[in-house]
Amino acid sequence: MSRRQDTTRSASTAIGSALYGLATTTVRRLPRDMSITSAATLATLHRTGPRRITDLAAIEGVTQPAMTVLVRVLEESGLVERRGDASDKRVTLVCLTEAGASYVQTRHQSGVDAFARLIDDLSDNEVEALVAALPALAHLAELESQDREAPKR
Image 1: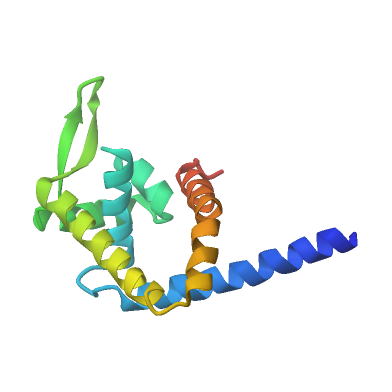
Image 2: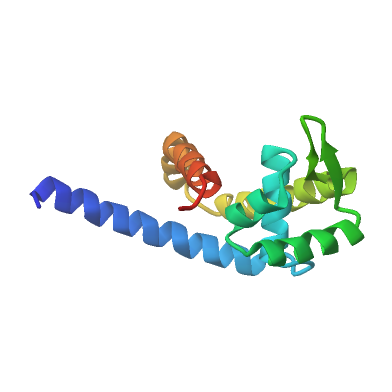
C-alpha cells in the first residue's frame, strides 16, 4: 500500500471511529418509547413511502415473521396501516398514518435539536470545519441509505 493509501485509510478509520462513537451515543440518548427497529421502520416508510412487509424486513435486517409482528404492533398503535396496492391486488402495502408521520418528524426534530445544542458549544473554527464537511456528510448519508435499501443477496 502506498503512503497516500495508508494516510487515506488512517483518516477513514479515524473518521469512521468518530462517527460511530457519535452515532452510538446518540442512539443511547433517544427516547425509549419504542424499539430502534420500530423507529427505523417508521423512518424508512417516511423516507421511501409504502412498502411490502418483505421489503421492510430486508431493509431493516429482520425476518419476515418478525417484521409482521412489528407491523401489527405499529398498526395497533395507530402509526401504520395496511392498504392494498392499486397496481397488484394481491399485494398489501404498509403505510404511515398521520400519527406515524408526526412521530417520525418529532423524533427527527428532537435529534436535530440535540445535535444543535452540542454544536453550539463548539468553537467557531470547529463549526466552520463541520460546515465545510456538510457535503461529504450528506453524501455519506446518501450512500448509507442506498446500501441499506439495496436488496440483500
